Amino acid sequence: MIIIFGGTTEGRLAVDVCENAGKPYYYSTKSSAQDVEMHNGVRLTGALSADEIVAFCKEKDVKCIIDAAHPFAVNLHQEIAATKMPVIRLQRSFGKHIDGVVYCSSYEDAVAKMSAENIHCLLALSGANTIGKLSGYWNHHKTIFRILQRPESIETALKNGFPTTNLLFYNDDYTLPTKDEEKELMIQIGCDAIITKESGESGGFFTKVEAAIELGLKVFVIEHPQLPSDWIYVNGKHGLRRAIEHTAPEFFPLKTGFTTGACATAAAKAALLSLLYDEPSEEISFALPDGEIMTVPVCIEDKGIASVIKDFSDDPDVTKGCKIIVKAEKGTRGIRFLRGRGVGIVTLPGLGIPVGEPAINSTPRRMIEDEIRNISNEDFDVTISVENGEEIAKKTFNEKVGVMNGISIIGTSGIVSPLSNEAFIQSIKREIEVAAAIKCDEIALVSGKKGEDAVKRGNDDYNHDHNYDFSNQKTASTKKTLRCIHYGNFIGEALKAAYELCIPSVTVAIMIGKAVKLAEGHLDTHSHKVQMNKDFLKSLAPEYADKIDNIKLARELWSIMPSDFFETIRKKCYEHCRTVYPQGELKIRLICDDQA
Image (cartoon, rainbow, N blue to C red):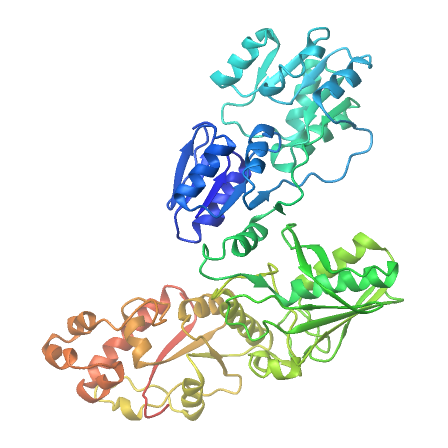
């Protein structure tokens, strides 16, 4: 069990992550003002002391605390720290100190520094809870506070004796102002300085500061409080998920992992640091494509050479556990990517990588380039190798898309979702992209090797005669440019990709078991999701209801049903396929087990 302390944007993100587990958890906020949609979560409201948190966690068997509260919720952070329980802190990104900004270690420090300046009018953007803390300044200097238009915020101002005539309010929908809106407000007020808290991007910190700097105003910033060093710190959804998997391993049934591209990025950064600074790093931090910072263990093999073991996840991925090695050397032509042993070479167009180049996709290249440029503007050659990559590649679809003699360094998000079907779907799309690039007239979507063999053997067009003997049916016409692509169970996703890439003709070659599911409207035919529906079959042929009741496998239909029944199945498959492939030539081929 997990408890989240939220009330912030980060709180919502933590809820989104925990909802994916499909298990109950608790979401605690001081007030009920924040509206959060939860299906599995239980909402708690009201401040809790350390003793109350411990007692609650013991009663509910809570194993992990997620602190997703505001950075300046100091009392709450202290109460959480006092519990001595495992804590994951979902922390905002604060960035480096900004030149020209006056940073203050406390409110007393801020009052002293502002009082020493000749400020005509101060705009305080630090929130209602700071009114009392900054009273030493506004009691003697003109100050305008902008706060949320909530009863408790106004009450705080009144309680501290702050003049309500000097209060401004956010928009009714509480949306953060844009930079132009902030500038307009500052000009309208005529302030010559602002004070705000180091609240991070989600708190609108950078927008406020940039607006003030562009107007030439003085900027004072209250630094965010420091939190315990023994907490686990993450700054996004992927890091949070992985931290929960580590701290409360029973919460998520399956683990996530890193893509080959993410591992290569970490190894490349470690290799470069060891080359330039001789730093023997044991772990390295790097940015995912969405900007989230992740950290992985690395091994420095030699000066300028580092390796990462591909993180284990519960995804059925043949590359998990493989060793990815990167060598960084001084170059002469920008950043070049070179192929080491175990990385494939591209031999066909359509992958977004020139033929002859190492099979390192565009996203990992960009990730590595960004990390290098954050360290140095010099030229470097980056050689990526994968231990046993040639053998691993034989278990993939690489050769079918023209990647030879090794695996691809891939990954669009940097994260491998557990048992996500995304990886398989992406491989289908890549094959269709290749087909489009080499201008195939037709592709055949087949569920596996048996279907592919049946399609390749057939060369007669389909006979629509209801008296046709399906047990001897020939399949799709085999044009020179016909390309067979395995859809596994994802008929719908494959057809969507074919339509989006303007493939002019598609043949769906399908065996009767999957055909029955597709005919009922299931474009994903995995047996874990949908079983053969005998009631559906009986609705198509009520006169054969008794025989249908007695079958155990769909293939038995071939021996008990007439040919017009299979024609009905084929037509219904066609209708459902047309919903995702609305234009272009579409054929449905029923493949008999005898053919397969």
